Image (cartoon, rainbow, N blue to C red; front, side, top):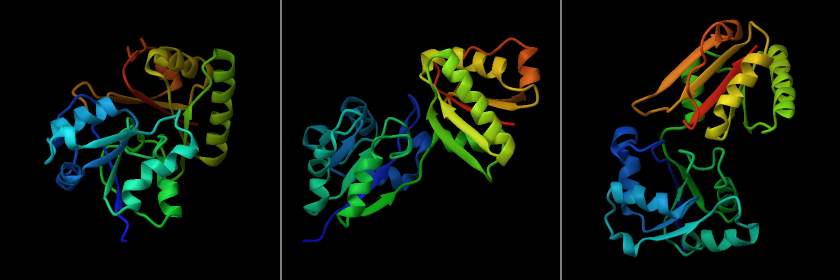
Length: 236
């Protein structure tokens, strides 16, 4: 039996119509699929309803893969592809398998000889880097930094030092309700010449991307970014 493919389906980064940010081939592919793995089934259904899909939602299977999914549960999620049915992978993070638990399913697909098809769509990490003016030749994504202020500031100093030594852009994110604390730590901890970029609400109507040296950030009122999806970047 010929195995199906696993399509990595990007989704919009906020409450916008899929057609506004997704290429036509991605929408066409998602419309025809009947089996999906998603980080959150509820938001996945909302995305599929907005397309809309060729099949009624009641006939579409959506199984969840999130941070609580054990490794032993992955084969069941991949089973449709192994049986010859194409499978779609949807993330809460925009692009599947980037800062997303879907990477584990993609790894298993490779092990089982299932063809993996990544599709074009919005990645907040890459969009932030593109718009920052910081180095795109050498960069690293670090996910979430420590939530407690002392540990967070220690980690920021480490990242700043590495950035200075390697001319590397450091990229990280924060839980939206702690964005203010993260920005304050950046401004208070980093050297005056270190450039900091804040990329907020990417692809949305209120999108804002601002890059300034720390010294400039200190001389102005900090922007209100609390509870708004934000990517942080620094280069020393």
